[in-house]
Image (cartoon, rainbow, N blue to C red; front, side):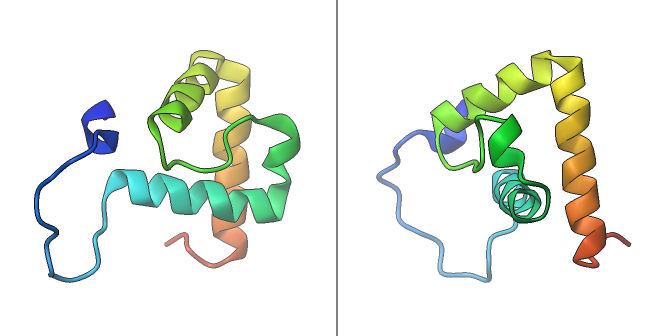
Length: 84
Protein backbone atom coordinates (compact mmCIF):
# COMPACT_ATOMS: atom_id res chain seq x y z
CA UNK A 1 0.00 0.00 0.00
CA UNK A 2 2.91 2.36 0.62
CA UNK A 3 3.72 2.07 -3.12
CA UNK A 4 0.41 3.81 -3.87
CA UNK A 5 1.62 6.95 -2.06
CA UNK A 6 5.11 6.93 -3.63
CA UNK A 7 5.82 9.76 -6.09
CA UNK A 8 5.60 8.73 -9.73
CA UNK A 9 6.80 10.28 -12.98
CA UNK A 10 4.49 8.15 -15.14
CA UNK A 11 1.87 9.79 -17.30
CA UNK A 12 -1.68 9.96 -16.00
CA UNK A 13 -4.36 7.73 -17.49
CA UNK A 14 -7.16 9.66 -19.21
CA UNK A 15 -9.85 7.06 -18.69
CA UNK A 16 -12.94 7.02 -16.50
CA UNK A 17 -12.99 7.90 -12.82
CA UNK A 18 -10.62 5.86 -10.69
CA UNK A 19 -12.13 3.54 -8.13
CA UNK A 20 -9.36 2.22 -5.93
CA UNK A 21 -9.26 1.01 -2.35
CA UNK A 22 -7.36 4.12 -1.10
CA UNK A 23 -9.95 6.42 -2.70
CA UNK A 24 -12.79 4.41 -1.18
CA UNK A 25 -11.16 4.46 2.27
CA UNK A 26 -10.63 8.22 2.02
CA UNK A 27 -14.26 8.78 1.00
CA UNK A 28 -15.52 6.60 3.85
CA UNK A 29 -13.36 8.38 6.44
CA UNK A 30 -14.51 11.81 5.27
CA UNK A 31 -18.17 10.71 5.24
CA UNK A 32 -18.01 9.16 8.71
CA UNK A 33 -16.23 12.23 10.05
CA UNK A 34 -19.20 14.42 9.12
CA UNK A 35 -21.78 12.05 10.65
CA UNK A 36 -20.00 10.61 13.69
CA UNK A 37 -17.39 13.18 14.78
CA UNK A 38 -14.50 10.73 14.49
CA UNK A 39 -12.16 13.73 14.55
CA UNK A 40 -12.56 13.79 18.30
CA UNK A 41 -11.72 10.09 18.75
CA UNK A 42 -9.27 9.29 15.98
CA UNK A 43 -6.15 10.95 14.64
CA UNK A 44 -6.75 10.01 11.00
CA UNK A 45 -9.56 11.82 9.18
CA UNK A 46 -8.42 11.25 5.60
CA UNK A 47 -6.36 8.77 3.60
CA UNK A 48 -4.16 10.81 1.30
CA UNK A 49 -0.59 10.18 2.40
CA UNK A 50 1.80 7.61 3.80
CA UNK A 51 1.44 9.17 7.26
CA UNK A 52 -2.35 8.62 7.04
CA UNK A 53 -1.66 4.97 6.17
CA UNK A 54 0.60 4.64 9.22
CA UNK A 55 -2.00 6.28 11.49
CA UNK A 56 -4.68 3.94 10.18
CA UNK A 57 -2.38 0.97 10.80
CA UNK A 58 -1.96 2.12 14.41
CA UNK A 59 -5.73 2.30 14.83
CA UNK A 60 -6.08 -1.15 13.26
CA UNK A 61 -3.65 -2.60 15.78
CA UNK A 62 -5.98 -1.55 18.63
CA UNK A 63 -9.04 -3.75 18.32
CA UNK A 64 -11.34 -1.44 20.31
CA UNK A 65 -10.49 1.61 18.18
CA UNK A 66 -10.75 -0.38 14.95
CA UNK A 67 -14.22 -1.67 15.86
CA UNK A 68 -15.36 1.87 16.76
CA UNK A 69 -14.04 3.23 13.47
CA UNK A 70 -15.72 0.41 11.53
CA UNK A 71 -19.04 1.10 13.26
CA UNK A 72 -18.79 4.84 12.55
CA UNK A 73 -18.10 4.18 8.86
CA UNK A 74 -21.03 1.74 8.70
CA UNK A 75 -23.40 4.21 10.40
CA UNK A 76 -22.36 7.05 8.07
CA UNK A 77 -22.78 4.82 5.01
CA UNK A 78 -26.18 3.67 6.19
CA UNK A 79 -27.36 7.25 6.78
CA UNK A 80 -26.30 8.32 3.31
CA UNK A 81 -27.86 5.28 1.66
CA UNK A 82 -24.58 3.74 0.49
CA UNK A 83 -25.17 0.30 1.96
CA UNK A 84 -26.76 -2.22 -0.35
